[in-house]
Amino acid sequence: MVNIATKAINEHDLMGNSLNGSVPYNPDDIQKTISIVVPIIFAIIVIVGLIGNSLVVIVVKCNPQMCSTTNLLIINLAIADLLFIIFCVPFTAWDYAFTYWPFGNIWCKVVQYLIVVCAYASIYTLVLMSLDRYLAVAHPIRSISLRTVPNANRAILIMWAIIIVFCIPTAITHNMRFEYDDNFGPYSVCSFQDAEYNRAIYQVSFFLFSYIIPIFIIIILYILMLKRLWFGVIPGRNVSSESVRSKKKVTRMVVIVVIIFACCWCPIQIVLVLRSFSLYELSNMKVIIQIAGHILAYMNSCVNPILYAFLSENFRKAFRRVISCDKHLKRSTNDHLQIVGGGGGGGGGGGGTHGDNNGRLDQELTIGMCNQQKHP
Image (cartoon, rainbow, N blue to C red; front, side):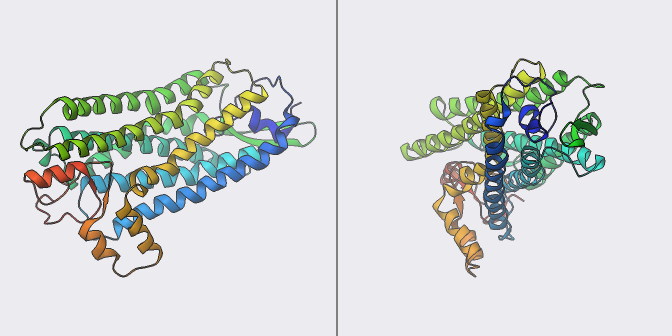
């Protein structure tokens, strides 16, 4: 009989489900280390993610005049990552450390459901941000009427509504059940109901809709954007060498964001698909790979604030002002608070819609007030 303390290590997936596989390795060699080290790493991820994403929300919300579409998407991404960190990481850490589920059947379903909802919300917010960036760069004039705050709000609400409905099967297919261990007796686990549902179909569907499809959409959008930036002339403006260099720098940044996202989620997604087909026979090394995949996937929720915010000197200054409760924060952020790595929002990201202003707004992602609010 497998020791209860190693069951999560042997049979764990992204959502804390049991995979009910054989254990052809000696778990005692790594059991104690993993049950201590992994929860500590997850705790660090929780702390960093909570602080980073909270600061992003606070800095943007401190500006009462905020009205850009990009700002709304950044806030939505930060909120999705916060919810993911709250509802996914702690319970996965619990499973690695203690294995048994003490929170009841209802909370089992709720947690599994919210984990998947938050994962989808975070991923598809990146898709919306990529679409917003593409419209701002490739269609700066036409997008003025599209990239408005009301449209952004509608897109976000529609996204959440679709995800909330789409993820209902997750709550249905998960349940709390009781197992027995020779040393510890009966104990409860929160897991996928293998007897009633097909795990392989479930996992492949999650892989397709939470990774392959959004990554494919993002890649297509950035290919079109790169084609326009490198080989095309954007209509409605004069293109200077400085503007071209800035656009290429920003484009490289967003490409890095996509690459990091893909790299963070790829290992655990592949492991889970292989395990659902019983093609991932466990060994000490494969257990380490699986745990590293978990850590990478969860770290993505922590690095987003760094990728979208901390690379901006002005945004770092705003963070420091928030932490020190500087009374000049609002005025400073309204003046010139920008993140390198995205397009403006709210009809071009600001009040001005003429040549040089459009060029500047395509170079930097404004996180301040919509100057004149010409495009509500």
